[in-house]
Amino acid sequence: MVTIVANTANILCAAMSLFFGFVYLVTPKFLNFHSAAIEKKWEDLAPQVQTLILALMRSLGGGLVSVSITILYLQYQFQIRQQSWIPFCILICGLVLTISILFAQFTVIKKTKGRPPVIASLFALVLLIVGYFLNIASIAVSN
Image (tube, rainbow, N blue to C red):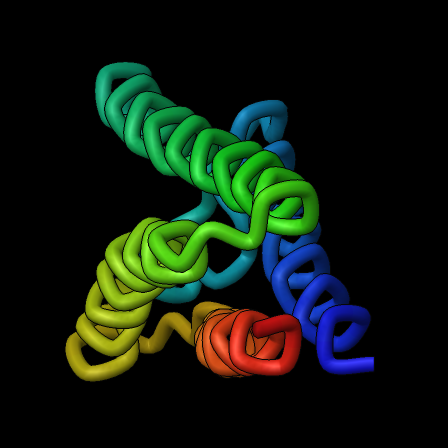
C-alpha cells in the first residue's frame, strides 16, 4: 500500500509538471496572470519583448518536461530495484525546480498584480515530500 501511494504521489507530481511544461512550450502568447503582472495585453508588447517572454516560457517549459520525465523514470526504476539513492534523487530534482518556481511566483505576487498558480506549485511540493518519505518507508518495509 505504501508503494502505491508513493507511486501515485510522484507520478501525479510529474504529471502536473508535464502538463504545465507542455502549456509553456506550446502557448503562442503569455498567460492571463502574465498580462495582469505587467498590466499590458500581449498585442501591446513590442515584438522583441514578445520574443523574450516566449523564450523564457519555453525554457521553463523544457525544464518542467525534463524534470517530469526524470521523476517518472526514477520512480519506475525504484519499483524495479528499490535502491536507496533513488528517492533522494527524485526529491532533489523536484525540489530544485519547484522551489525555484515558487520563488519566482512569490516575487510576482509581491511586486505585481499578477497571481500565478502558487497552489499548484505548493501541491507539487507536498506530493514530492510525501513521495519521498513513502519511498523511504517502502525500503524499510521490504527489508
